[in-house]
Length: 482
Figure 1 (cartoon, rainbow, N blue to C red):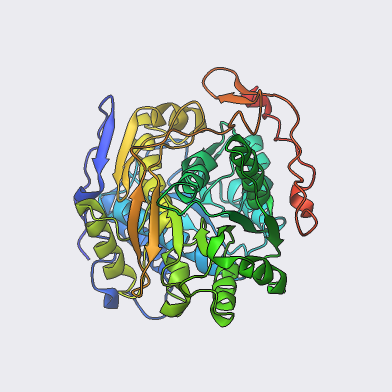
Figure 2: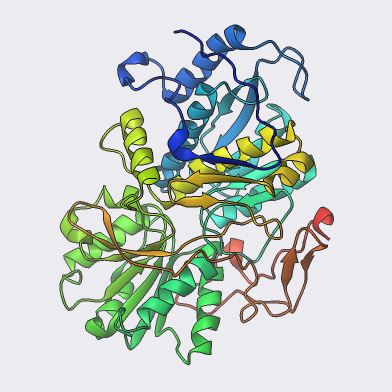
């Protein structure tokens, strides 16, 4: 393998990179180049080790002496109920790292990912694996997490170690930290536009609304925000269900959905394998046919669709800030390259686009800062942008979240979403909607988080609140965010 000539790191005042200009992946377009005995991570790491001596000689830059690569953490579940959804995020991040390494790496070094399996255990394995990455592997950044519980469990470690956690999935808001970058949609960028559409003429303005979510912090907080928002429109949920992640008796849910089904809409925040179980149950009860309830999934992506029979999902709706079917040249090139690298049966999704784009955005910030430390990277993130598959990516300095465009898709027989509605433009992030969190505000550039009235998120539903999200007050700011 011949080594590409190293390129000087650009240092203009503001860096903007178009994803269409990215070069070939490290392993090339032929998947047969990779030895069968190596998994993807091993191949990437071994290739990085082999190429580094040819490409670079090291100066310090805050790394161990003579280190020829920068270790970064990729922390996602590869097994368990969330394994299907989270493994796809890891692959998107690996893809971005390969593209960066193919261009010569970062700060004169190649990047080596460390990607342990958290096995869908948010409360214990996520912080345990994160601690090892931060303390033993000394990574400057971890791209990881999927559930709100995993993010909350890990974040104190990053604040203690002064490192950066980059979280690609949807967030419920209600928290912010200088050590946290969030790339997924907030409720004001996804949940509220979805409700607006449902209650408008296009959505049919159904007379009954049912909330259905995986029992956890994200669903509880989202339910609270949605309930408060509906109250501003003189509406409310007719029923609420919070479902254990490891499966449940779906009969009570299906009975409630079947009642006046033609006039019922379900707002769903089900996650992982629960999506497949629910849509299969709808199909078995005949509730997925014409005249059945409208189901709008907020955590339903292409990766979940590909495991379901087309007739179980056809016609159902999803709200997201990216779909694979987005008809832009940048996205079409991204999808084509990803399939070429990972297999033509693979798909891309909202959270995957976020995971991929955030890696590139972080790399641009490091290149501009010329350093890996937290403060330098945070400062540089204010001045860089990345033209990702779904549109331009920039970090809002006040919240360290991103501006997002909302899309509504209808699932077809090809297990893809046809985009039937999009927001008029990008929607700025709102971490603390005032109708839901009165008095709470966030500006990480000027004092951090301002506390307001205590908020009880233990909203009465059909099941007890989970231990991770009982009577919960928004998390107080970390000492560095005061």
